Length: 124
Ligand SMILES: Nc1nc2c(c(=O)[nH]1)N=C([C@H](O)[C@@H](O)CO)CN2
Image (cartoon, rainbow, N blue to C red; front, side, top):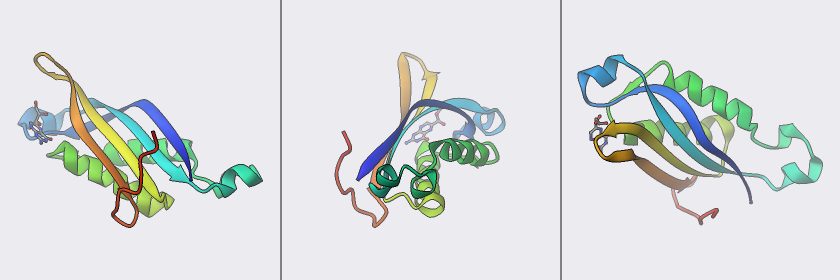
């Protein structure tokens, strides 16, 4: 399996348990890796792979119109989007809030999963 990675993607989203986080969007940083079929590289055709530009567009679009209490729930939503809309066989996702707590640069969630529910292996 080959892997596509998207690093340090900045996305605006409303996420958090506090009232101010429910009304105001904050910037999240996403690091995302997902599996793609080896056949894509062989045929050199965008239709055989997962278009990372479309992935970014869909994440921005969906996160822009919802509120999540927990960063974990937001993370599971993004992973489900990759499985359900893009048929990704394997996903690794790290999502961080930036600078929201004193003396903490980033805080967030890390999810790694195969579409069948198992963590198959690590892409690193
Ligand atoms: N496990 C979690 N703990 C906390 C979360 C969360 O999403 N998952 N969120 C918050 C607040 O919204 C925080 O971001 C405000 O500083 C606190 N704990």
